Amino acid sequence: MVYKASGVCCTEITFEVEDNIIKNVNFKGGCSGNAAGISKLVVGMPVDEVIAKLEGTKCGYKSTSCPDQLTKALKEWRK
Image (cartoon, rainbow, N blue to C red; front, side, top):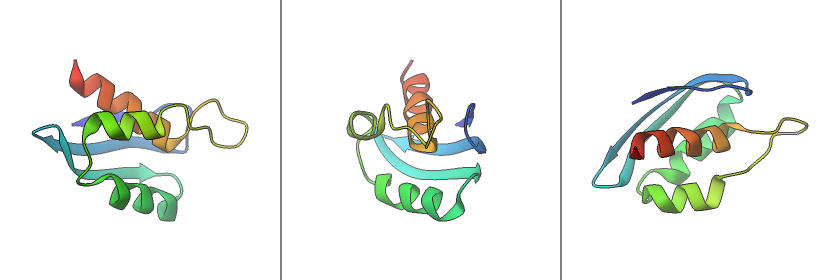
């Protein structure tokens, strides 16, 4: 799935989920090291666990962050 991020430096998040387990995550734009780290950490985790851990994470003065945007993307995927 491709999710158009908003309010953060990355412009989109691409991810794959199989049997409710995250298989792949890629952030386009943003802080490449942080995005790569988050991607590696969440692969293999259940969707609900990722949402529970990352939802509401803020980036500096922004009301959201790339990890928070990932949770929004995962919630949209669940619909």
